[in-house]
Length: 175
Image 1 (tube, rainbow, N blue to C red):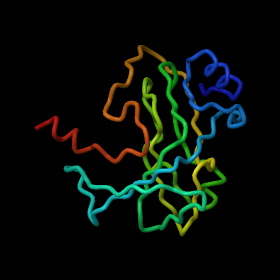
Image 2: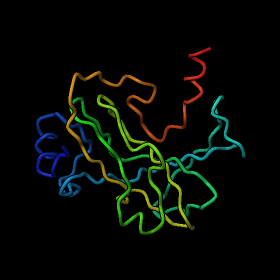
Image 3: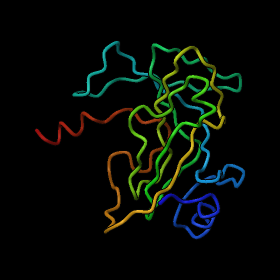
């Protein structure tokens, strides 16, 4: 089951969902709009290697915006910290942003129960596209979980700003 807009508000008020800052104007019939934060990351090397830490370059969006290029992956973040110890959050791009040719989440829309932080956005435009800090870029839906809950305590917990891949840490743990 998916939470409706009024239930998202009630769950936020009761603490079952954490959204900070919370703005009732960002509540939709069954989701909550999230906004693009000011920091973007790109990978610095021409080849990304999942078995090692990859260097990144960070830059700050100003109010004039920034043009994303189709040949580049950009890691952005939500302004809002969002999480829940009760519901399963899923992040999707807004349809109006998708109609501009921007992929907001490439392969990982599901969040874990217990995660609480800013969400990293995987931004990939089909053609050059100007984005602005604070623009409504995605929406998070909340689903009811069934069964015992094991809260997330992983490597991205309490994220602030965009987070590059830490896939290499998984491999290091196996060695």
